[in-house]
Length: 500
Image (cartoon, rainbow, N blue to C red; front, side, top):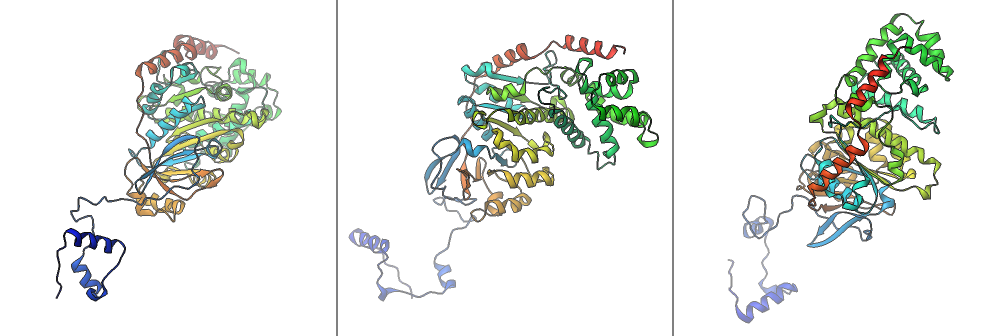
């Protein structure tokens, strides 16, 4: 029979002392089986009402002992009621930063706070935002001394379109032409999934490649995407272009192959197919004035070298998905091309530039897999986020999980948790990753070139901005970089109506 004795006063203090130091009176011990013990003492569980117990939905883990004391702040680690600020060093950022998490878990807030710190530190940065909300918020956070460093690109600005010519390149780097053509082929493959529909074979690629190269051969007569359908369908214009073409491979294709081919490979058969893909953009009143300008409104190489701030608002609700994706991929392509051109500058003189891409799977091609490995030596650090792994093709998945230095996971779905658990084990398992609270994440951080064990992190709340600053930046960018729509349309009309 079990008897309970009430303690008070000195006897109670003595009991606390004995219990604290595990000093027991063995004469009063009672051996119980697990079943008997369970009937006496119940371990807490979620269904039990125990107000004094703080439940954890996912594990907490201590941070590495060598956490950096410099660099931008990502968040804070909370372990056993002790808080430590988590930072990442500039050198480690060049190995890139990958963020994944469901909608509303905290990705955009983290991106916002990271880019805010870069801007305040005087760093060069670019943000590509497919929704528009983050871009608008960043404008409010720009400090007064950096307002004139900002280039705000909003394609939905009907009256003052900013020029963006993918076919424009620096003549000092003729190899850039190959990059432009290859990237545009990748863009159209991604937009239309040509291979899957049986249209993206070698014949299509040959016509598209040589059309782009021919247009680029003579910039004076037009070197934009607008000229591509014309060089295919207008024999006189094509003949004029060929008369100024110095590339014998391109010239031979048009004169000896395309104009003499028959059947499915004939020029007449290929023209409607290719032009139908281009006309989707050319006919769009928002996109046409942007891609029709022969000279881009700003130089991407200067943006990177001079540490400017490029904010891209690609709100799909205003542009439509396909137009948003096209412009996004062109911008990413231009940034990557400008980055690779820094080979003419000694590495120690290359300024760090930070490229932030939200929902990056929509605005990147397979080229990103190659560039991830190369970008580090050109001092381009990429920070990209998205919602779930299924959005990535297999090649990009391999590049991300093989080349990215730091990885952060907010709450994800069960399928992604199963895959990501291999990246965060043995600290976090699938159950932890699907039960994370909003603004809580698992982080695997690169510290001085070495990957740390995973640990938990809590991101900081969003900073408050100034709406007047955002208004001034928009007006400044419109005046400095925008072009009157009427002037753009008039110049385009002149080019297209000119007889050759």
